[in-house]
Image (cartoon, rainbow, N blue to C red):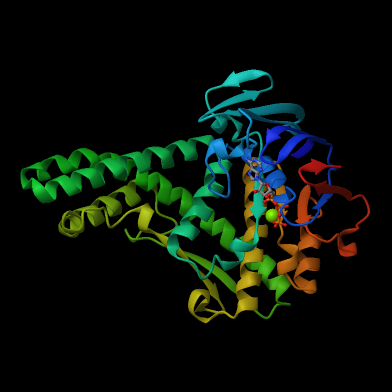
Length: 365
Ligand SMILES: Nc1ncnc2c1ncn2[C@@H]1O[C@H](COP(=O)(O)OP(=O)(O)OP(=O)(O)O)[C@@H](O)[C@H]1O
Ligand SMILES: [Mg+2]
């Protein structure tokens, strides 16, 4: 897919704006605090309506205004489509091809993007929640059904955790725990299965990228770490049984701590370079290369699974990479529509067919 046009009205610091990007590399450049990340964030919002910065919807509205609008025309699934998001106070309206939809989740399976920003470069070293967000975000963009399962799982988990806290004070409630356990295992096993399948593909593709980036010197592997001991190759029924058993065994611990200690919300994945855990042993450069390989693999997995190339959003990431990694990245994203933000326009990016947009005080030209 690719974005044909993007229009803003009172979106963050962009009062009014319209751009028509090219199908290849689009460079958004300008000084600090001019609106480059805001522009990229708007392109990301069409993936399903959540900011990668974790912002609240009211924050999208330009200071002093009541409503923000962003509208895009994009080519996907063999035809031109249109999507509009309208933010007003704490509510959001979503229009797809002129029809009002209940939520921005309806954009999943039509519009897709992958974002890469400097914080991603620390993915290897960060805590497990950052890595879980990474996988879940990817599987949510792949299929609307996956986003719904994850959302229902989280609701069920919150209810089970609330009950666990109550049991501590009212032990007679313990017999009601089973009500949540079945639903939790039903939804949880589907999440684990999808994650295991996703990691399998991610590992294969990122391994190939890493081989290229390290000139064949390093081997990159990704391994899912399940708190219920589920492994790739097992079916949903088998994973359900393992998760049920893990919940049963952790019941006393769960009641004692007041939260559910096993399940996909506690799982993680290991990034392994030359058979050693990257989290513990990898150098800064190795970590950067590993994340770069992961991000490129994320785009490739999405494009294979959805049959559409996602749009690639690179926020300020070029300045964080050395010249050889920059060249590697640019070479590998040649088949995608790319949006790159940077402060100084770098002639390295002056590639034939690329388009440049200067952004100054929220005005894009
Ligand atoms: N709702 C809003 N209304 C008006 N301005 C806003 C709103 N939200 C954010 N801003 C402002 O938009 C400006 C531009 O932010 P943005 O993050 O896009 O800058 P940037 O060009 O990416 O800068 P940098 O190069 O430092 O990353 C910031 O000064 C920010 O305070
Ligand atoms: Mg920025």
